[in-house]
Picture 1 (cartoon, rainbow, N blue to C red):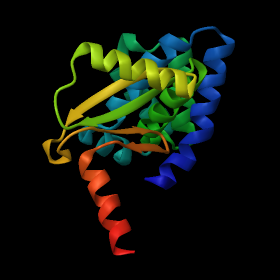
Picture 2: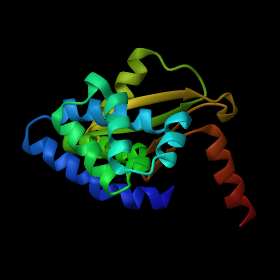
Picture 3: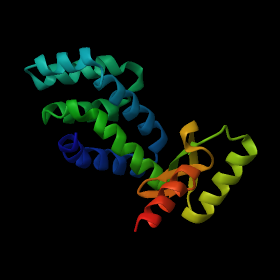
Picture 4: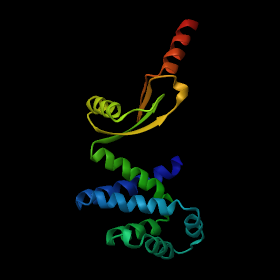
Length: 177
């Protein structure tokens, strides 16, 4: 939900800033990602909604977090509970991951290909995107045979449609104009 993202943003930013200051970004990413997954569980959501006391909700999350949460992580859960924001933990997790990628100058590229890409093709594609975007690129490759041939690349707002299906659609559109 967009509303949850707006609510989660300051908490994710504060947690990320603290992680950078304490030089502990990697462990915070693991911790926040795990707690985001816990908080997205339907049974946990029901328990959090039923919880009337913030201390009770914080204790529940700390107990569920177990050894995954260090002292600072436990304090973060308490702050979220006091402000009745534990339900936005999945969004906090997503935003934290985005801050992490930005911090490490990484980006995820969603590649849709008409055929299976071998390792050499993926490496060449990744190198080309890294050069163009000036960031490390992690490829998420999926196959869609309806493309006929070629690939579609999505990186954030950037869309590169090099598929035959896309080229035919653009040609048809130009012919109709």
